Amino acid sequence: MDLGTRLKQLRNEKGLTQEELGKKINVSKASISLYEKNMREPSRESLLTFANYFDVTTDYLLGNTTSRQGKAPDWADEQDKNDLKKFLEENENSMTYGGENLTDEEREQVKHVLEGVFWKHQRNYRNK
Image (cartoon, rainbow, N blue to C red):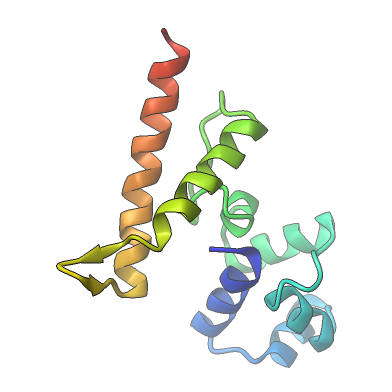
């Protein structure tokens, strides 16, 4: 899931319009709209503001983890995080059960499991 989709999902979970969210965190409605459409990337400060407001990690917002409160292991570097993101994106469209598409909630649960498998594999690979 990309940054824009995550921001929109978090905003909708709080029942806020783009304008309401903008007022709460001192960002224009237009900027929120552009972030959600992935037409503009937020500054580091804005990213931290979003993370603090929604009580999630910046890694979650950036798609480096599927856990809102979790984070990549301390030993993980940027390449590991990019590899995880690519791994999850490559497997996202194949998430079905019995030929039926999964719900968004089920997809997130499967992604969380895949993330755990990925980090375990990476740890074992490094320990060889």
